[in-house]
Amino acid sequence: MEVNIKEIARRAGVSIATVSRALNNNGSVREETRRKILQIAKENNYKPNPIARSLTGKKTNTIGVILPELVDEFFTDIIRGIDEEAYQTDHYVMISSSHSQRNIVQTLLEFMSSGRVDGVILMAPKIRKELSELIQKSKRPMVLLNSCNSNNNSVCFNINNYQGAFTITEHLIGHGYKNIGMIQGPEGNCDADERFRGFSDALLKNNITIQDSLIVSGDFTAKSGYYGFIRLMSQSQKPEAIFAANDMMAVGVYEAARSSNINIPQDVAVVGFDNIYMSRLLTPRLTTVHVPIVELGTKAIRYLLKMIKNEVDANLPYCEELSTGLVIGGSCGCTNFSAPTFFK
Image 1 (cartoon, rainbow, N blue to C red):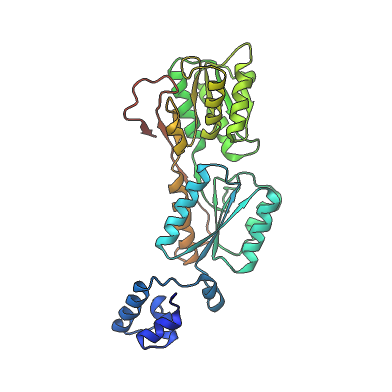
Image 2 (spheres, helix red, strand yellow):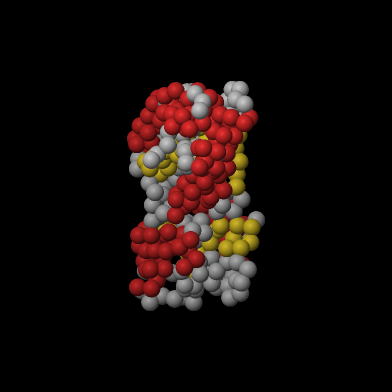
């Protein structure tokens, strides 16, 4: 039988109000009584109902999370970082996967007005005017992830995409490659824009001309990586190396190379970005940029909980940028990668 607060009160021989105060560590309860109540709750795996809490108190102990379409491991790892921290602090997570700006706006409006969440974590790599204005008007604490809206008025946690792209491009240049192609991410996406900027600056720093013919568009999916590779390798001047702007597109590159009887890295070197689990299963192992994805989610919810508890001023801006690292595999031409990760 599922135990509720009324049953705990009966077993402990106290009132429901006393049980509530003990479970929430709120108000005066004799220590002996508190221990007895907590022991009964523990023995029966009792967890407070967040909906019931929202009806009886100001806090719901629920965090709203709005992410783009959940297409790969990057987003599931962010959710894992958020959910693990939420569980440790007796909070619940309500996740919405939004497929468009319209969906994001609607979801955010619902979270803001329904009273079902205490705060919101929002990842929206493309933020247009309507969404930007809504973020500024939000009455609930909000943390942004990898967002173009990271400015003096927001609380945000970002990945240093520029640094990672610059570093891995210079790694390719260190191998002697000069004709380096890139499969970009979606236009207007903050992560994609910063990765292209890092790629471009690394070439310019090393006096290598950026060849427009070696830059093709993708959308962070394996399918776009597949067709991006076909386009690059069908040209008269083929790239010596390809930087896929995320690992899922690199997966598509591997598939296209296999079906085209092109060997990696003998015929063309390949590198990626994100260090998702799937990248470790490719042969040869993919050289990629390590992104602390789980840590990104963990840091976001920890700071949001501080905002909710008034441990920090929710109206004060705060931004933190997480560093990336380089994971060396055989796809770039390296032959010795027994200690593969180098953090910058």
